[in-house]
Image (tube, rainbow, N blue to C red; front, side):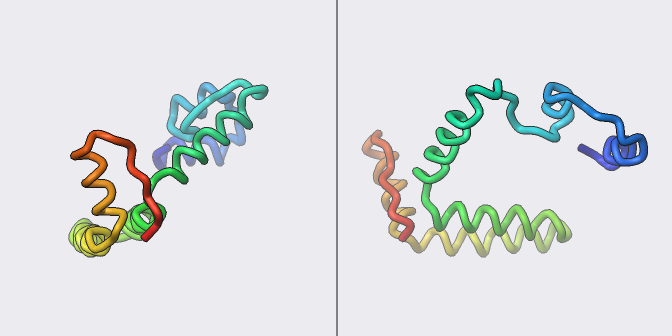
Length: 108
């Protein structure tokens, strides 16, 4: 949300609604309460369908890279990308793309 907006929210303790949270980037999505569980389940299914190892490497790159300088972040990303290239899931993803079919990742 940015340092200025964060300070304002903390110092004033003003409440914001879901639409404002979405608008300033504090929330990724806004859905009606009665649709929330189905929406979350659908997102979970979508994430689980991706390569779990690649997802874990992406999480590591995002979480670690956000707290480092650009050069170190780029080196980390290159190293993690290299790790992902040596997997069966990488081969499956490339093959599925070329065959124009959905990937069937195994986490290997």
